[in-house]
Length: 81
Image 1 (tube, rainbow, N blue to C red):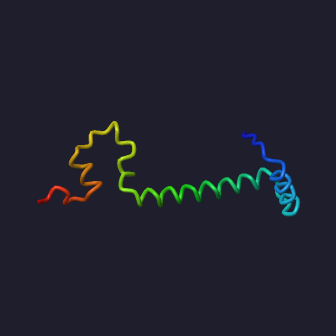
Image 2: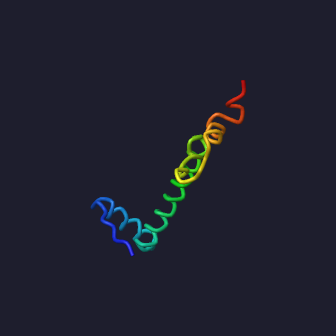
Image 3: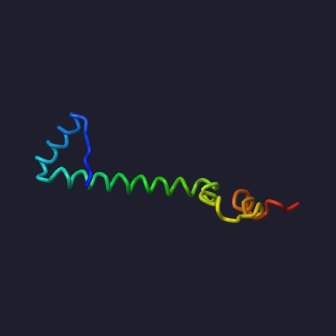
C-alpha cells in the first residue's frame, strides 16, 4: 500500500481523466508508474552501454587486477608497444 500526495492541480486532472475514462485512480497511477519505470530503466541501460566505466560498478569487493581494469577501459591492446 502506498499513499501519495499530489498537488491540487494534478489531483484535479487525475480525477477528470478517471471520470472521462471510467478508470480508477489506482489503475491510472499504477499504469503511469509502470510506464515511467520501464522508460527510466531503458534509458539507464542505454547509458550503461555508452559508459565503459559502468563495467566497474560494484567491483570494489571483487579482486580485479590492474590488467583487467585497463583492458576494460582501454581495450585489449592497452599495453602493447
